[in-house]
Length: 195
Image 1 (cartoon, one colour):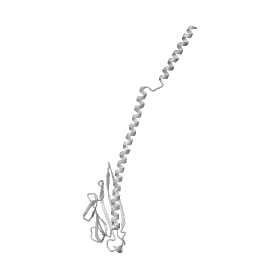
Image 2: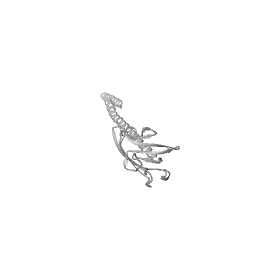
Image 3: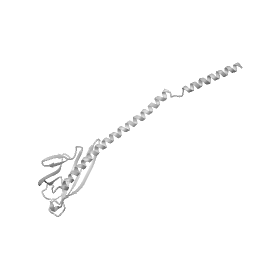
Image 4: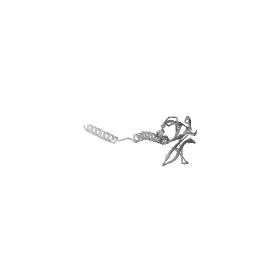
């Protein structure tokens, strides 16, 4: 019987030792922690790389959009000047420029005096000249390859004056070149009789 008691005590001690050992094994081993940190680091690096790529693309799109907005402003400025101008001149005297010219001059009457604004291309950029001063209308990064003006109604032919502008070129922004071609037609606002 004593042997049985001793065996029971021994079994109880082994059970207690096993339970104690199992309660101590409830955490993670060092190897498990290192592997999980490695996997987390790889996922975090991929996420950071994706965010950097997205931010770079966003900056390129913003730069391109700024150049497109500048080009739109230049075309709107030309259109406004033609709309409110009184006489057009394509550099060929007083005749219509049906074949397309690379120059247009618009006359204005300001406070009883006559002034003029001219548009032409120089070094791939649109230039606006008024009162002897020339300014670039398009920014660097917008290169105009072709600028044509088609104007009718310059001659006294009964046609209401209007001009069509055709611009084509390239917007250089970042690593990508964007080709463009813009055409707009503007008619004079003043009735021909008041010109």
